[in-house]
Amino acid sequence: MAIRKAEAVWQGTLKEGSGTFKGGSGALEGGYSFKTRFEEDKSMTNPEELVGAAHAGCYVMFLSAQLTNAGFTPTRIHATAEIDFGRDDKGPVLNSITLTVEAVVPGVSAEQFHELAEKSKAGCPISRALAAVPLTLNATLSS
Image 1 (spheres, rainbow, N blue to C red):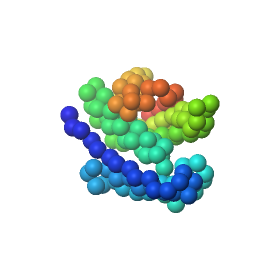
Image 2: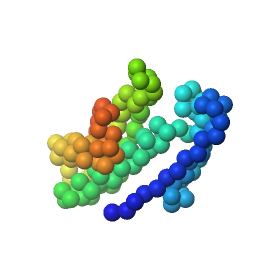
Image 3: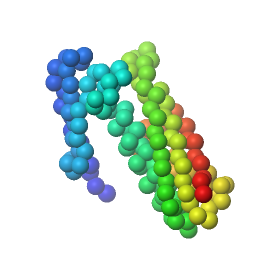
Image 4: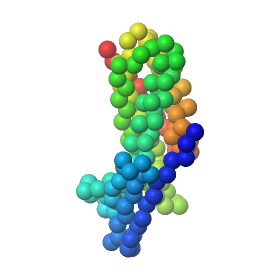
């Protein structure tokens, strides 16, 4: 397997400063700030949004592989990751992640789909990396 690389730089104080990040491939880069992370400023991204995007992307690929290995060809799998970012007695924390998944998979039964969706919840590499964060899966099979 490959080694993936990303980098980040922060300049200034926590509240007045800002940061930039970029992935090693060059396909991903952007900025973030205190306001985009701890307030409702939507002018840039934040680390939690990036975690959510990575988790949703990883999950749909893993579920696609599970379905394909079981003999089903998914038409479409859409996942949304909702990151509950809050505070505990140690500071900022990811309280929980909710993955909401909707899939169109011809020929699969609801029972088979849900079994593979749960298997993917446990097996996706990002899910495994975030195992300390409670993860809820809402998976729906559509036609």
